Length: 93
Image 1 (tube, helix red, strand yellow):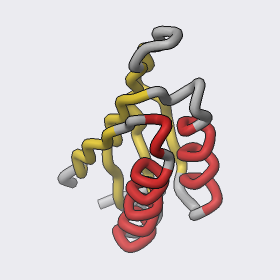
Image 2: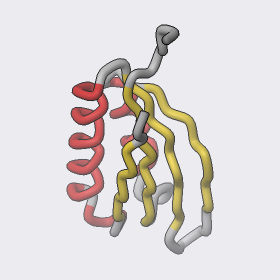
Image 3: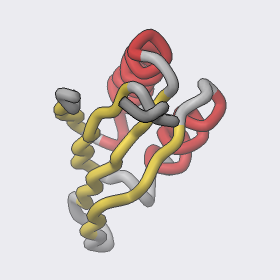
Image 4: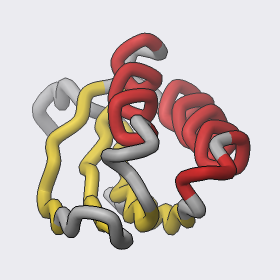
C-alpha cells in the first residue's frame, strides 16, 4: 500500500471543566510537544458547567501515540479542579 503519514491514531473524548481550568490547552500542548498531531472533531462549551471535546490524535508510530495518551491521562487526573474524564478509542487500521 501507500506510505501513510500517520501510522497510529485515536479519538480522545474529554469531559469536564476543560476551558476554565485550562485543561484543554495543556492537553493540546502535550500532544504537540510529544510529536503528535490533533484535530478537534467536536467541542461543546458551556460556561460554568461541564464542557466536552472530541480530539482526533495522530502519531507516526503506536509507541508515540501511547506515550501521548499516557501523558494526557496524567494531566486529566492531576488537574483536580477540572473534574475531567477521558475516554480513549483507538483507531483500528
